[in-house]
Length: 196
View 1: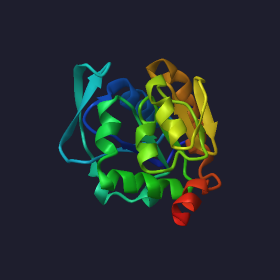
View 2: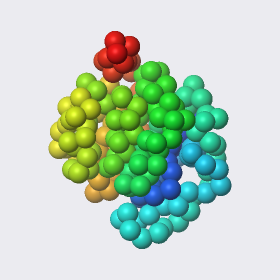
View 3: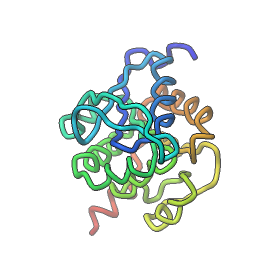
């Protein structure tokens, strides 16, 4: 990869229980392309990563609380999976609000595995085409998403993949989308929210 992301700052939003390779491989991919990354979370200190949702892996230092972060400071957002991680994020109002505000900017987002749970909570999956880990696809459909079973799916800057097996394709595609920059804001969810 060249330096197509030079000068860009990418946010990684994760909490305890994040699947380690879904944090480290996308982070390393965007850094290799020249981007800076910041790890945002719902508490300061460190977050505990996992291997296969069962075994404790490494811990990672949190750069900033998501409640203190502004979507305007970042060119892209990565939402790794692991079952506990998005479950922790989706009950934190600061994390949910950050995701909602980020989607309003039209900036690209990469989400993998169980990560779309946070999108569901933020009501930004409605009307979007994406993939996920098989066990949450019904949740996505119920939230109004068009769910497909593909290695990597792109919908107006939203990049999604199913599992760690898809990481090579996912990492390549997020670098490409982050380099493209903002996309047209998809407002079906916002319109639905405004109507209720």
